[in-house]
Image (cartoon, each protein chain N blue to C red):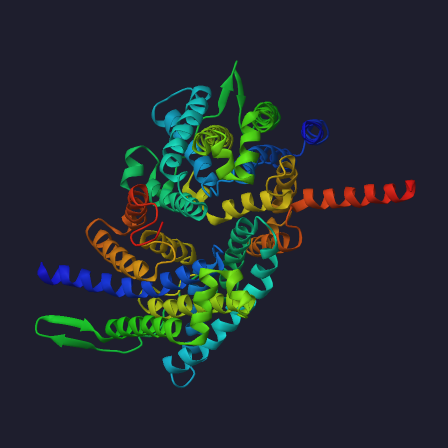
Length: 290
Length: 321
């Protein structure tokens, strides 16, 4: 009984940590560019397929090291140019936010169907990043879970460090606070928008590589992931990175418990109910500012 | 606005005289009518009332399911069931709108979209089965609508087409009346400056909730009409495909350019049928189209027409000088 609950808590923590990575990427891109990215989940799947292509059909040496080393520049380039080519031209219009939503929705369908057309509709399984288990007394941990947890948390810390300690990070913060002011002091606003988009693409793509090991690479997972990331961002408070972290862990736990005790089919309903209740009482989210 | 609508629906209304033998053409025409109204409602919500609601397909499906459940499980006559489905959808629309419409734009998009995503597990799961949704199997053998002994079903296409046409016209009139009335003016004021409009006593929340209710009613009504026409219903209606098709209509027609979306429905439904032999690539093309149209024609076909007529009138002015 106790072991059972512990198992559920571990799987909740695991999912929550990866969700945190993805949701914070989304909070960042919304906070800075104010673009509502509906194609976010498709980059999660893109990360999964990227790893699959490298590891299974190509079977490149170096395994996951090669995947991470190549995936980060690849996702950066994809995100950067998508922003430059698709979102930036809309920005001139007054109703660009709605247009951006529609465009990214179309893009998400295009990408998801593109994956099916390229790789077929069947789920792909990724090899484990590390094999074996770790026994501590009566508890048995999968080493893979530990590595995923550590990688996503260190990804988050790395992100926080970049945001607070580098010139790029400070430029991003400045643009988030006041785009026009940032431009006056010489920050290339448009490039920061594109870079933010690219960074968020990396974060969700890495999330895809990590979580697809547990949940398979699924071309239809995109919408669910996108909504989950959005729910976490809204639940935690838009633009609040600390809020997103707590929200991700809470939602990860909620999912694990609801999935275990009530059945997987109720997860979406439970998450939505939690969101609606939160928004009804605190429209700005857990830790968002008014 | 009324003239353009009259021309479009007039042409669609006359066409069955020539193509009534071809069941494919009749099906396309009927679907154009149904989708044009659903898309118009969405345009009214998004383009005019400025609510980023992404729950339109969900309301359509709720209408379809309520009517199907009423007529199959409870043996309600389909005509009554369709009306009741509209009312049920309107009530659910208001219930969703109550917490939702006070939120800022992106939150509304999120909640309504999540609402649609949560609807599928609800209908497939034990809760849905308890109210008679038939789980993942869906509902088969929904009875057709019967008025005065005439049965309006998919085996009898021409009468159903004209029934749909009449309902389309009635609903289009309602939409035009809303746009022309002080509601439309209120929306315009709210869109220009919500704070200023509020200071003049225009209650954003009240108008948004009203329009949400009315459009949900109409959407539910057409969802119900559709289910009695095809006779079967499953949660496949909630797929991203249906959602994207609806999105393309509004993108092609132009957001907030009212009769444009009707034209968008005509183009999209026809194209969707023409592309059907392409299998999975149809959706790929559709998704790519949304991206390209939003980028190149931000106001859709209507924007294109407006630009053309602007150039023409500019040309005339030069000639006069």
